[in-house]
Image 1 (cartoon, rainbow, N blue to C red):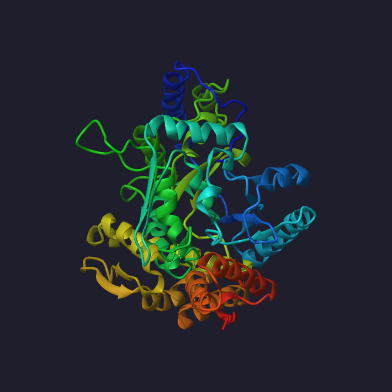
Image 2: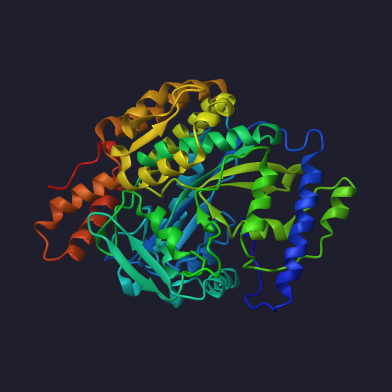
Length: 497
């Protein structure tokens, strides 16, 4: 999805040519996916983790590209913000001890990033939005000086033709304008990739859309931005608005769906319809064409790279999205993008274990639930979970054909955990492995402690003895880092004061 490009200026003629190539790639994709046996294989999972780099004052420091260059590893890459850094893991089999295997990969890479940051007087913070951000941290130079990110920023501005409006309600509402999409860099995530067979893709994807909200409710980790107390997972609102390419005053009486959003409806047939949707509804931003004749490649029995389609789809940031990967004969994955960065590796992997277990538990029967569970309710659940965390009232289908019922996120999660565990065991996950990570999640839910709740309680306790909100938020970050360093998962952290 993060295909590198070498240019950031495009001719007017590049866009219609790129659009024609996209249509060809959609045809080639369907040709490849229609082959018997395409994409079949054992389920695997992989992860990506984005983090912030800060100085001794817990303020963002723009050395992400420098650290990535020094590391010289494809597993450590720069992100859109110059003060961001991303690590990736190699995929592992879902059967066995997948979360421990991912944890070891992540731990080793995080430690390498920490060493390189420390040599430059910096530290690494895995948190969804850095509490110490100031308004002056966001400007054109915030965006990493690489062709891909320069072109992304320019493309969003070209399509929007107006300043970006950030308006987020909450305890202390925020309302501001920005001339550029630099505030996209204020958001970091923990993304999980799940390989899915083409034949079961629709069921698995729809199950992911259902499970995302309740797991997000227990994972929120960004309750403040620019000193304002906002949503439990403010990143959901901020990311959508900071990169909204739609003009504020459309030329028609309808608006196309947002480029960053939850989705438009349940998947009916498979992954191809989601790729077609992204092509139909969203204008190209990076019209870089390759030399591949994708249809000829597919006709000859090959596996096309589909560079243009993958490049375009990587600029449509749905919270769950399909991935076509030509490697190893080609396969499909679902990129689960809603989970936040932080606090600890164990907490993030606990979130992943429940999300994956819940998806696997729901997928076999999800089609029977959908007629009585409109997609609008799943979208509502997602935004309510982001705003209110474990206290959110979610709507959930009780059984096929029955009306959905309202239930508090905390209670829903506790009722789903046994099913998630059973599904992981059925998928071959080691029983002790599954129990370890599910217990971390369960303890957090039972205590009502999420990253957002901890940050807000810490802010309440610290602010009373600090001269300003800014100083208090800096102290929250310092305590947050100290607790991560203790090796304890979030539910065992102390609250300052």
